[in-house]
Image (tube, rainbow, N blue to C red; front, top):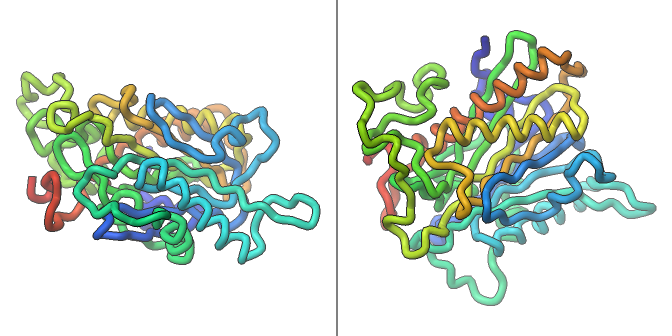
Length: 334
């Protein structure tokens, strides 16, 4: 059994802080996960159209074991500049991987495509994401907003606005799992034409509406609803996420946790992991519990990673706010 953490946010995992920077005119933004001390990290990419920075070093066979921060950003490939702003702020703070007399902050990043959501993208010579990254790092703390903020500002799903979502779980074995996700999927988070979430079986305490699954179940629910029917190219996608725990994990175990968290995508989005999504999960293990999980505890961690991620995805859509000029309705008004 599990229960949500006190905040029901990623920051229920000790050792992490989250900051957002939002530009509503741009309809885009940046979200930063700051590791208070370097955390063991890994990544798993299962979408067919990813946009990333510094992900190769996260493979278990590569040298660097820990990271200082992780960045989720809008802006397509332009948004990768956000990591430079975060890196600058961390360098100011004296953080980073020691190389002789120098310190190099390790800041992996992933982006989603939100260029065609109606925002003003006429930013001139250089995109604004470096400055947004710097601002998001300065905003990092234990409490943060969800919905139409940060990397979720301009996010869309096939049928409703997407957004930034988060959730946490405390397991009976004492470990904590947290998820953070910017939901900009090709597919849909809701069942058919209803307001019921695919993630309903995992909902805790009515956190995304408490509607459960529809009854009777729509006969056409299994038919995929995607942006291909409404958007010029169907390429305006990607769901990017962080799964984290306070357990002590190796890089290989962190990668397995990231793989398990992708099951939450499949539980909460239909379809997921398409050739036109860049679906990605970073995994962070802060080790703040001081405990290494036994094999049976690690299986429980992986199951919780999937369930917690599914909840975070639904909450990202549920928490999105209606704004002038929206391309799609929000869940609250849809």
